[in-house]
Image 1 (tube, rainbow, N blue to C red):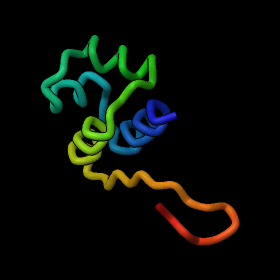
Image 2 (spheres, rainbow, N blue to C red; image 1 turned 120 degrees about the vertical axis):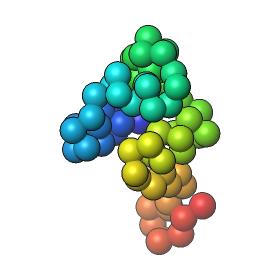
Image 3 (cartoon, one colour; image 1 turned 90 degrees about the vertical axis):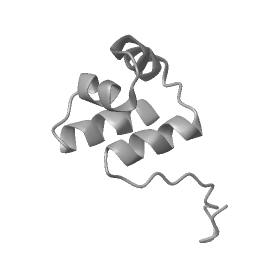
Image 4 (cartoon, helix red, strand yellow; image 1 turned 30 degrees about the vertical axis):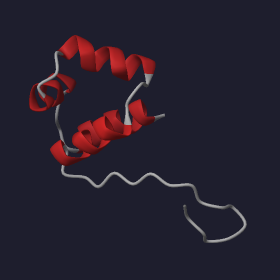
Length: 69
């Protein structure tokens, strides 16, 4: 799920996965493996968002109201 979103933002920003790995000081294989497994910590997602000039927001939103947690 997050991997697909990261790929979409990379495409929108016209950046490559290799570029993102370099900006994060990660090996390309580490990033590729994380994308393949869709395995990111919240801290990593925040870092990725900063590099891609985005805001990362994680919350639960109740379907029957506008409440977000």
